[in-house]
Every structure is written in structure tokens, then in C-alpha cells.
Length: 313
Image 1 (cartoon, rainbow, N blue to C red):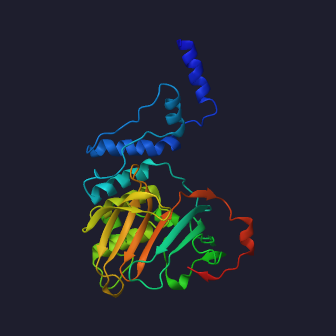
Image 2 (image 1 turned 180 degrees about the vertical axis):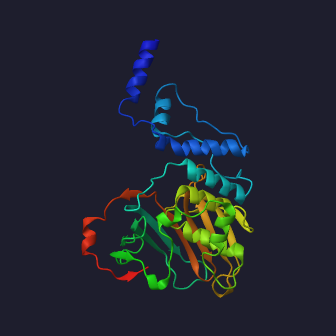
Image 3 (image 1 turned 90 degrees about the vertical axis):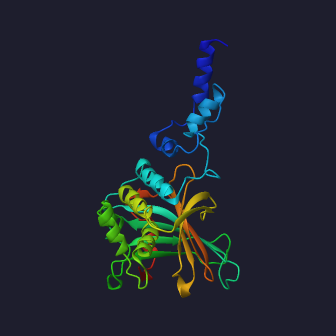
């Protein structure tokens, strides 16, 4: 084949393929940067054929990188540092105060050996969260595939002033300090749980705050603080969607009834983007959860006007 034929073939192969935009390439770029910084194992690129394979790789916006396995990052602190870098490197929608963040929070409860009356159950909650918290949000509790008899319902979410501030709104989190000492103090004081030391209170706050969308700069700062906490370790876990990831887990022997609990954050094995988390308490079962990437919308869906307000949060 001559050069003119080769170019024509390459043009035809690109025809109709999506362009590798910055957002599509971001996870691969983040993964490559993470690999380069760790210097613990080589980056392996998949060998592709001169034309078709190259087009397929570029169209997908993916470069194959060795995934987490036996050659894991050296420590849980290293995983969290890489997660902090990924938080600010990955494109993220930035809402106006008058918009909603629309995302899914998926949770699965599983029974453990010797745990009575626990699951299994799988819940998908579609959430519309007011960015500044000034307007009621919306929750659509979808039917569970594992338990078809479980109810489906929609619920308006309003804040309860009499119950305290609750979890900060997204716009409030955007004002949180990124200075390490200031943020460390804010997290330690977030939930004043009796009998918990500062490190445990901080970790509990990290888990709670990251259970909903968090602005990238604050998310990165939270990961950096979590990296300094004692007692964290790595393991391989699956989130509520079944994706296998690298988890950072902290053990707390002051769980319900004095039980030893394990609370985890689960990250993608190559990009280190947060996937979700897990809580395991012997005698109380296991819950895994995951969050989808938020999208922005100006209004609630039209059907929300027929939803009754049941309670406040």
C-alpha cells in the first residue's frame, strides 16, 4: 500500500468516531500522571495495529495502564495523595447557587455471617440537590432489583432548622478552607461524638462529607488530611455497582455496642477517582455505596410538583 492509500484508510477509520475531547481523555491522563509519580511500576501501553487499533484507542480516549493488583501503591496515604491529585485534574461541573446537582447514590446492604435480619437489599436513589440549600431537593427511591416487592417512592427533601445545620450544602462546602490546619480543625469539630478521639472524629467526618458531591478543591484537601490519619490501610473492595477498586480503610473499635467497625473509601484502580465506600460492623452487617458523577439542572422534573413532603432532613 502507498502513503495515499494509507491516509485514505486512516481517514475512513476515523469517520463517525467521537472526538477525544479533554473530558474523555481526562481519566487516562490522570492515570498516566499517577503512574509517573509513583515510579513503582512501569506504564504498559497496549500494542495496536498501525491504523484500526490506533483509531479505536483514540476514539475511546483510553490508554491501557496496568491496574491495581499485587503491585499496589506503597501505602494508604499514597492512595489518598493520588486521589487528591485526581480530584482537581478531572473535569467537574461547577453549579451556580440557583442550580441543582443531579446524581445517583446507590447503596447495597449485605448480611454477614451471624447477622440476623439484615438484607440483602439494593437501593438506587436519584437525587436532585439544591446547590445552595435554599430550595427543597428531590429524592426518587427506585425499585430494588434484588427485592422487587420493596416500595418505590418520591420524596421532597427539606431542611429542618430545629435539627441543626445538618450536612453543609454544596455552596457552603465551596467556602470551606483548603488550608490543612483550618480544615483539619473543621472536620474534627464537624460531629462531636462522645468517646471519639480527634482522628476518629475526623475520619467519620471525611466519610460523611464525601457521601455527596464535594467541590474539587475541598475534596482534594480532605483526601490530603485523611492521608495523615493513623490506622489507615489498603484493601481491594467492590462498590455498590460491582466495580472493583482500591480501598482505604480505617478500623474503629468504638462502633455500635463496642464492635470493631471498618469504614472505607473506594477508588478507581487507575484514575484514583472516588467511586464510593463501605461500612462493615460485625453484628450489624455491611453496607456499600457509590455515587455517580453529578450533572447540573436549573429545575426539578415536572412530576415533582405532585410529590408530597413527608419529612425534613
